[in-house]
Length: 89
Image (cartoon, rainbow, N blue to C red):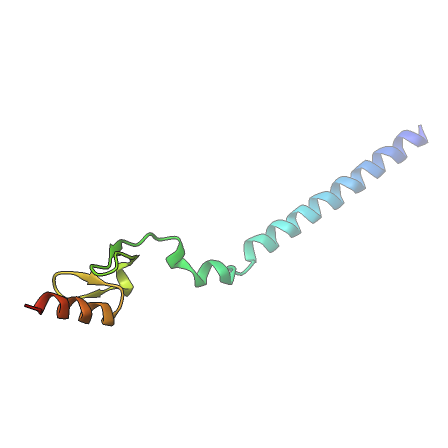
């Protein structure tokens, strides 16, 4: 009879400890700060339109491309070279 009571007591202590530790883990996870990696790189999750350079045919994101009103270019040098090439007789 004593063995059964002792076993029930051990099980009760085990369950109380486990419940307490689970609550601590839940509270810490809920109050954990946002990771810096996720907040610093939102642009990686969003897609961006790609454009092609009119001179060398390289594809690049639209946000860093040069636009002369008609064509897109990968650099100012290519934009100038394309304009010089198109104005030659």
